[in-house]
Image (cartoon, rainbow, N blue to C red; front, top):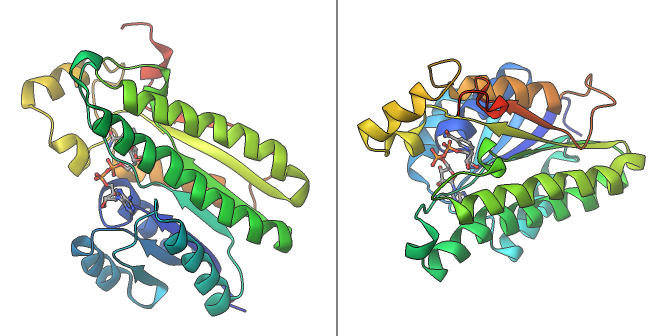
Length: 246
Ligand SMILES: NC(=O)c1ccc[n+]([C@@H]2O[C@H](COP(=O)([O-])OP(=O)(O)OC[C@H]3O[C@@H](n4cnc5c(N)ncnc54)[C@H](O)[C@@H]3O)[C@@H](O)[C@H]2O)c1
């Protein structure tokens, strides 16, 4: 049995996922860093040293790969203390221009992939009678033009989080979500400059958040010292969800 807390983090190669891995290692965890893109992973593992291991080329939508990840982790480390479901994608368009492929791809990764990860986590944590699951949703679950697929997928993540909090509460497992707003990551760096500037202007904070702003909230919810908070969605969005100036 490993002395350190063991965490699985998906979408770990860059952006918010990478910051979560760094923050959790700093807090004393051993991290299994999962991503389907192997390119960013090695740099992260070099940075984190012996406190993390990369699980490359892993797709969270592949049921067998998810089952193997959890089975291998328990075999190797004896337990799983926290699972952070962060991997996600966008394929934005107005609904009249959105293809079925774009709808399916986003629902598949953001909702089905998160559900698959939660199901395996639940089975193991239920036996352990302990665990923390943190799902990364988005402020966009409240609704965003051009994101009918993405907003629906993240609304699904919020609902999933609430249901699992009900189902798993008596096993000492908490399940919470974080809804980030505009965060400076490779995903948002792809936006047109003028579009990004308008989004920043619409923020009460008039700024973007950093990946570590999200990571700090994840660390709070993943900690074994954080009790009696479950089924909640915490906004890390510079106040945008208040909606007063939208
Ligand atoms: N950046 C933002 O402003 C923002 C705002 C709200 C919510 N979010 C959410 O935060 C999470 C991280 O966003 P980010 O901005 O860091 O994104 P990113 O694109 O920078 O990184 C996402 C990572 O997830 C990985 N990934 C994607 N699909 C995968 C799959 N099927 N299996 C395994 N790994 C997969 C990618 O390879 C990538 O490394 C996402 O769920 C996103 O929806 C981001």
